[in-house]
Image (tube, rainbow over the protein chains, first blue to last red):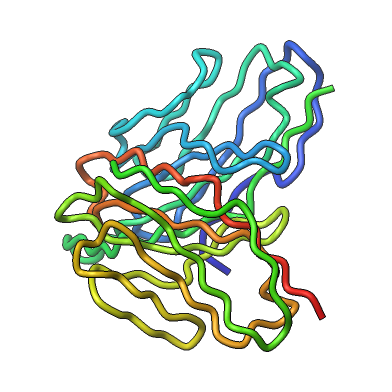
Length: 119
Length: 113
């Protein structure tokens, strides 16, 4: 168990709809990454947040948006869904904070993913 | 961030050693090299990380030459359960500045009986 929780685990919806994926990072982790993995493809970097602020953006579609809340959980919003958006969406966390000090190793801790199926 | 290149796939047999090389020609001075393992429909998980020379843990070894432009993950005596996709990732340890931590295509390792 990585300590990263993603919900829902599975989601089936129709084209044109909007969904929200949720990620709870490891306790105290400041950084959250979102990745998209289509069938038999590699991991595509979407976006990174650090302590509530967007810090890096990949090839994330304009129909997609994300945010990180003060309690450090993050949500990925996917709208106007298309068939091609069907994929596994992973979040990962890193850079832990404890007692005001930040420790980092560069290791990413991944959740088990949210599988989105668009019909 | 440094782009990585790995072989697409490798086949091996149980009990053999598997070596996967990753090229990262434009690695930065403060970048570390981290390898992840991913099983189907699961999130990647950390295997090993290094900066230079050799690192060994209970599951793998990581060899990094002096110029750091490549690295080799070594899996000793693989078993069927080592069948997975292996990714190398190059980037700084601190994520505060913002990093497009981009995974390459990974190497699909198939271990045969």
